[in-house]
Length: 565
Image 1 (cartoon, rainbow, N blue to C red):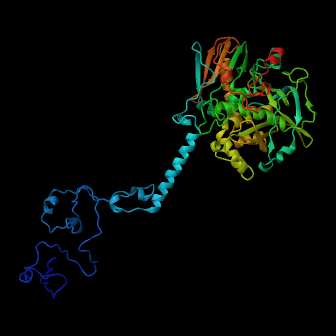
Image 2 (image 1 turned 45 degrees about the horizontal axis):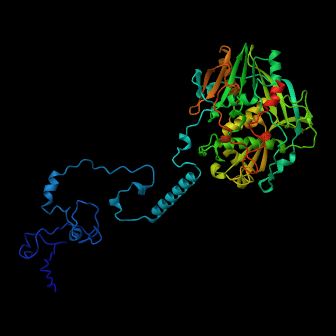
């Protein structure tokens, strides 16, 4: 048992609060312990605690004895042991620490201000953020063929053409110089119309996601992707000295929209006498349609993946061709022009397309002739209107972030804005081609896969129409800047000596390089780097193992071209 606790004598102070002065109470307080701390106080002050049983300390240098923690008077001046510590103490900065300007306050608070305190709301937010981050990383890794591969912004793209060691680089032009160029051309002159067009079917404008229409396959219609020098009409116009520069709308649109491009591309330039020909190689990337080129989300880099950049390009070209034929009135009635399709054999079924050969005057000595394409015709107010037909394709909503089936009905503008972000270069090239062809309307179709893993079956979800000039201003595509790029490239190439050259967009930098190449470059006997046939990705088929040759997106009917040549 513990012995009784004696309080001792408690002196009485009739003159005020606290114990009396030591001079008058020496005899009464002789039994009190020495050095008991006491701080004088007034009636307006709050009473403190004699012993704090709830205090905890985070200072590791402090004594670990729990009895010391309760009666802690180390800061009291009445203890002589603190004198030595005070003598060595120097005040450095008495200002309070600056408060942070940004971020939640709890992140910057020191632990001593909230000892052993858990903010449940903060902890819950942290746990949710960790779960969300883990979910994003899991989805990101699932969509990639190799987890250790770098992100899109660090990806190394391959050049569209193999740079040979004997090629001589003449110049490189950064895209930053293109933004400063501007050139105004007069209205073009129509030289010739070739081909035949079918009428646009207005009922497709009423297609909605709830009333979708299956995309048909046109295996019997032939599509031609003929380069400039293989075009018999352009050869005839060149022999007649109708112009000094010759190209196609595909090649010109690639040059005009070069600052928006990310993937590598190449254009062959041939200087023959005082004439200049812009060509593309057989099987060039210009025959395909890029998908998600300007998106920040990475695509699988395995070439055999159905969502790789190359596979999607082939699929997009396949969709675009079939869409351009499905939205027509196929009743056998066609609008014919001066000459038939220059690339088709007699009796051969060809796609609905008209070639419009137009001439632009660049200056007093240089004029340009381009072959432009329109895919359909429509009567508006008893006047003939030409249309271009193109299709945007959705392959997986996880990549685009927008589900077309949910958003197209109510937020079609948001879907288009998202496509302008992910496919800025492709939409700009389509708009430039419509402007070059003098089309009155450009129709954009929204085509989606039936299932994200089925790259063969597709449905049309909606069709929108835009006037090319209005749409170009909407996407910030300036015609003066477009022609300024073409004029600068033409002036640069006209200064070159006779020979063959190639313009190559750098795969990793926003710039174009000009190489001088041998005269036999890109010919049939010239050694390039084509992949073996078993490694090439073919257009999808019903069994997913290939396609009929006449619907391949990159097919150029070489036999027909050679026969015409």
